[in-house]
Length: 183
Image 1: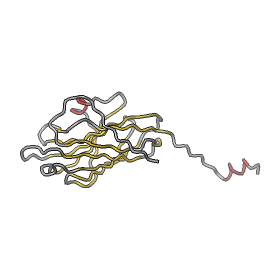
Image 2 (image 1 turned 90 degrees about the vertical axis):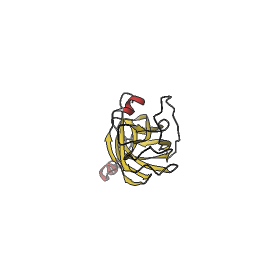
Image 3 (image 1 turned 90 degrees about the horizontal axis):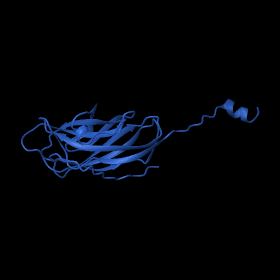
Image 4 (image 1 turned 135 degrees about the vertical axis):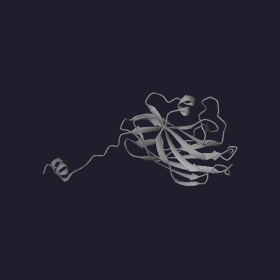
């Protein structure tokens, strides 16, 4: 059972010079502890960077620190394939400081950003939640790095809420079944 959540969250902070906007997030509402699940993230190219700069694309992912991002596959903006994953601290922590127990991760791709205005990019993020049950928020932000020193994005991160529940599997062995039958 997968219900789609489409939530736009405004943080009311300053926006850097924009080049890409995160427009949608689709995630299951209920996931099982320690079982990977997929989140679909959509972004749109809103502008190009001036000059002939080498640019890298980033998808920033805010998840609880005990969780892991197993993989990110990006399709769009002249790039198709898996992205390199890394922990992130820096400018994004300044604009969108994570709550205690949360951390930003980044998926990075390399491509020429100069000719993709209006194009939509899609990402599939595979996330493995921890063992702790509860309700958790995740956030996603697409951005580009200008090759010099700055990240650029339009708007605020998109977020969604997922509920983590334990996976209860009762294992019936032949010996257990026989004992219940009194044999």
